[in-house]
Length: 362
Image (cartoon, rainbow, N blue to C red):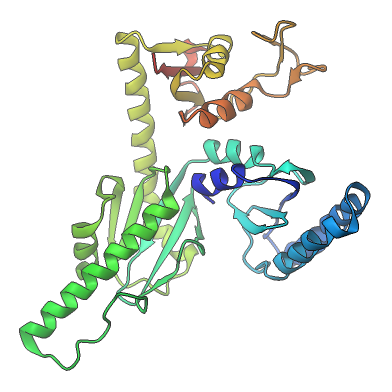
């Protein structure tokens, strides 16, 4: 799951739109057996609600799409969460690298808030396993990798527009043809990666033999994202084994990214574009004035709106009708909705700023 996929979901508005979200478990065979049962129960709950809320004619195409979607779920390799989205013209399942609250939502839009906030809170990176025959893409979170099976990945060589045989040429001419074929193929790999990654300018690890790595680095438009290069043939290597190769370098890259964010905050102070504190940042977020929001990991702030709706007031968690379980999540969602960026840093990094700070646009 990436930001562009969430934004695609947010762009779809049609009633009824059904969202089913649930945490999934994978630590034992018993866990794996329970996941399809829990999905089946939630689909039954969805069916009952649809039959009560819309006509049979309106419900039928959604029920059919949901049945087809659940049939294709790979329960043998779940992530930490699962999300299913269906309306009359759209159906998608997402395997999530984080857990989400279990619920069924029927509305005129899909329920993306949990995905958006968890996406922002999750330190992530990309891993491309290059091969002249098949390239695989993985999204990483901490010490885990999940293979991406959308956007054309895994991407085979046998695709339109790419010559795969040299037609009997030999020697230097054959070598030149192969080089050109490799360039075409890895340019296509790079384009597909860019389409999937979208605005997620995350650290990237590239894995492959020396020749493939060299060609990819020559043609890629994402060279500034590459933080690790690992040589070897790993087209068939499992995600669990790849993590041992990739994670040490990615951990350092993510740590360096946090330091870069803190330096940007320091620069913003000198340029008079700095803001800190939940109440101040809440107001700036509503005005669309935040370029980069920086939050300490696990920082939460229960609050309620003032009677005027212009301020937020801290609470002890008993939030009432104008309350928010966590104003930080509301701020994150608002900043991302207004095309700002969100970054998380280690606890204590923003102690003097109330655990939350921002670089203002103006």
